[in-house]
Image (cartoon, rainbow, N blue to C red; front, side, top):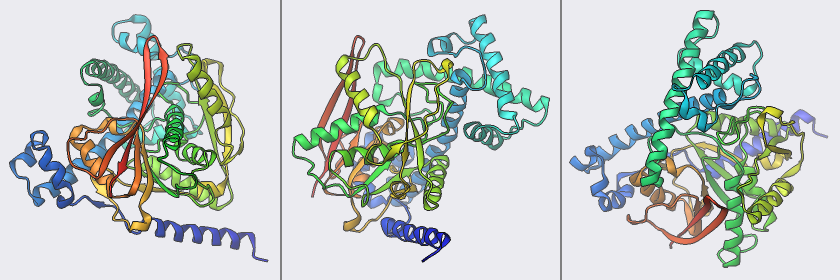
Length: 456
């Protein structure tokens, strides 16, 4: 019989070969000829560099520059995660959290200023500790990339000043975003740092939309074999929950597989899931999960929920039912991390995802606005899903992404997103089904999922 080491090596080689077959090639920048129909249709929205010279050379220079600029926003997004840790973290301090209401008073309220100062002291101590948690270790790595040190009292003072300066910046960013959301909600985040935050609420909306598609005859049982997820997320100190008692985790790829299996649309044993992300932290995390899976280690996810009194009874009942059954098709109940009292009204259960399911997820470093994969027809996607990601881009970039993703989706396949994408420029993605999910009546809150179908 083969040894355990031999079995592990065979599994690793098999998965590596499967990965190579799944991708066919590495991402390339979108060519001028592919982007030209969108650029021509949106001439009035072009940046000055392209308005002055709409040529292949100008496009090649601009697209590479913009890709670097967008990727630079990942660091700002991680700074926002660090700021949310300062505001809302519960593992390193006994100070009360700084809510969004309190954040607006920072710099003007003596009480809020004092809380922020003490929380900053506590966070610096936690970051400088000899054996920090995984999340703290990642935040310490961010500080080191920024040129900071935690080794001396003087260096720690500089880190504290940096933390508080970021808190003030975040206060101003939130105020600007709220003001802009009143006039143009679809563009409120186009200049913000790109966050990896995630939660289960978009995954619930995805499942409701998939059911809606089945009811309308748009998806048939067993019809989904290959999907892509744009921006799978890496949750740590989610800005809505303020939780740092669990390690960083990526939930959406496994939640989507679970929904597809439960609805009878896909088989977890044969599905292929490609994730596209520009965050090195997200890609490294998923690669590490795959490496652990080759050694037979499952991937444990903490399934966090924060039910609100504002939710309608229908939404509450539907979401809780989804939350309770989530993970049954991809794993089994896992070890739940108890919720600290200071974390507030958070419910938690855990699922341990089977290694074989983890190995169905292949992370790819790719910017879907400016980069593409030239896939053979048999490798085109049945579904591409992107939630809470296109909001970070302007109308031109959203149109380019819509056109680019169309080239990777098979005829009759779908792009699903909770952002309405502009349709003025020509693409091979036509508007399809829209799902509205009322959450609360007062104030009125509704989630949406938009479907776009690939034309022949």
